[in-house]
Image (cartoon, rainbow, N blue to C red; front, side, top):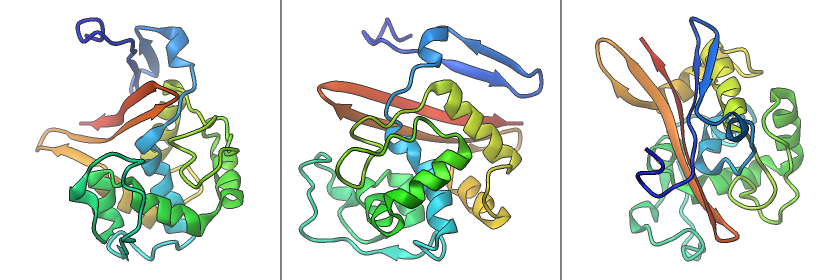
Length: 200
């Protein structure tokens, strides 16, 4: 599929019932890259835990002089919105405002405790998940998703339930897909993600 699109990429899957890993590229499965907007998954849990927002419905105010050039022309996200809407629209500016309240020292504590990525937050600016040396591998993304599914990360049951509801991408009588996309361009290199899990 990637070759047909003229792209270099990989797929990594974990069968939770059989406890089996599958990938078309074992090396890429362990290669760390910027998580981009997939970081909104754990960022949501952290923001709720530190009370950067009281709940997913709290409105995050839009700042008129925000740098829209840096993140592309997306007029549909240039307004005040809730964290729930920001997650659905992948409105990076809203999560950057939350990051300013959380602070990198607190992020380091949480990410270290979670074993999330390389915890390299040394880049300037608050959106370290889009720029700089921060990275996570596809296999590590799945390890985090497993712990979200099992609710074994250091967060409250309410925070997990809020996140899981926000992550729903497709729901039928037979299955639920919870997922998040991510895309960033750093140093002329594009990195795209689709991470999530299927529950039947």
